[in-house]
Image 1 (cartoon, rainbow, N blue to C red):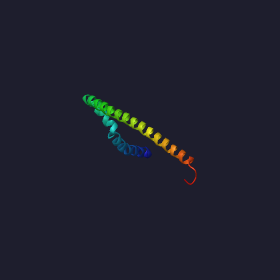
Image 2 (cartoon, rainbow, N blue to C red; image 1 turned 180 degrees about the vertical axis):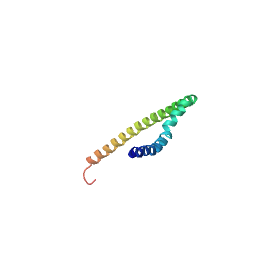
Image 3 (cartoon, rainbow, N blue to C red; image 1 turned 90 degrees about the vertical axis):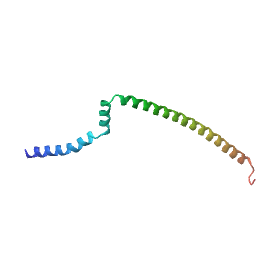
Image 4 (tube, rainbow, N blue to C red; image 1 turned 45 degrees about the horizontal axis):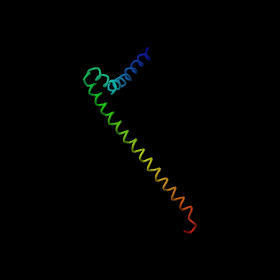
Length: 94
């Protein structure tokens, strides 16, 4: 009987901080906010759409920049190879 009381006390002492962590979690706060206000969701969706559009534009710009850098790298590599070929054709000592 004494062990059951000790176990109950232990469960209560452990449940208090766990319950505090769960009740203070950002996920629970978002759920409560979503349940309370419907007007905020539409504004949030519009804001997210705008941010998504900006991010898509940035990805397109970065893709173009990557392609440009790839082409420039290939050009420099061809130049270096041609210089190496020309220097290999030169007679030694010149």
